[in-house]
Length: 125
Image (tube, rainbow, N blue to C red; front, side, top):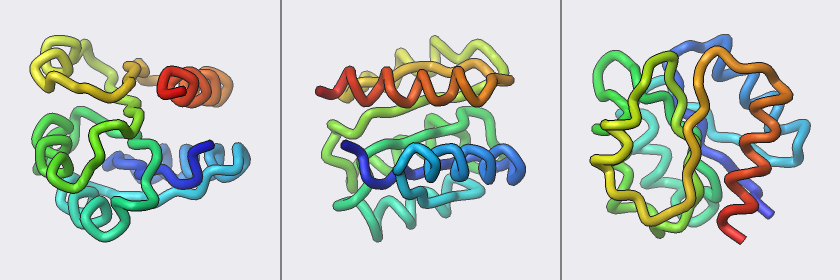
């Protein structure tokens, strides 16, 4: 069971909703508003992070740069949910990810989000 998720999205209302839904699912969250914050949180809490939810289109460091910055601190087994309102499949393919991952198209419903979280966690097991 995942105990803590790192939630990275520059849109505060969406980030807050994701964190509340995760809390309802019994998963604590570490919210990050940008790539630099996410990398710092990953560095500080890498031992307890069991899920990463990453927006691919953010100002400053984008999702690809953020993921690359977090890699030195990850076990490379943490499941990932990549989010975007755009098709970013080419960018995700470039990352060569060993961990289980899924792509979640924005906008999405709370129900779809919960299903996606459960799916990516099951992929790890």
